[in-house]
Length: 253
Image (cartoon, rainbow, N blue to C red; front, side, top):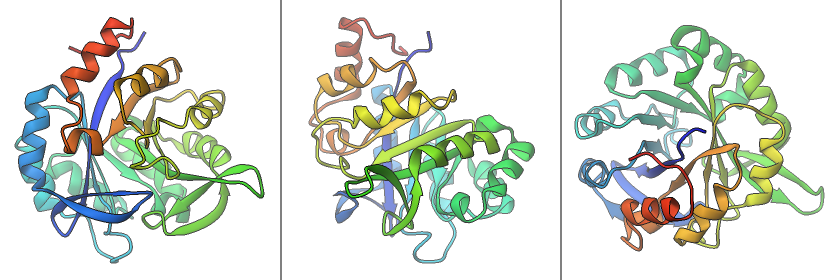
């Protein structure tokens, strides 16, 4: 059994770490380099760095900040936001990223997933999917451009296509749960786990250690991403890992 991963997320806007609820009302949290160093000391398994305004601002992810962060951490670093070409991927991987996450660009050009997997290996290509439940149609839909654009695309079908195109991992965020601390959307990940075989990182809704325990009862979910509870020190990564171990969940030391 793969050890479960605890993954803090740094949402970056204007060079600062931000956090909101349901992708809006962003509040300043601090300097990304300093925060990354803290998570390194706490024993985070990986770190996700998302430049959340890059796509809407029609600019590239800030490679200089990525480079600074990568110099502070030795854990794997996934970087996303504003990536729309192989050149963008190459630039960020050379800046210190271990994996790149693509979202809006993958929807616009699914062939980019395949090209990235061929050039850099599928293990380096993460497809990020921002998902919201649509009650009228009774399906999970994909949102792009920082959660501002409803594509009308069924999220479960898109996940299958992304994997078929070469994605080595999926980072799936429940917009409905984002920042709410009401627990992960287990229905979403249960349905998704029946359809794909690549590792799934679940994001959105972590509020207490029990949420992680419940999430990891799903064998398809190999990573749990959280921001608010770690940024505001409501929980620490060692707290979460101790609780998981006490409940029989295999975690990385």
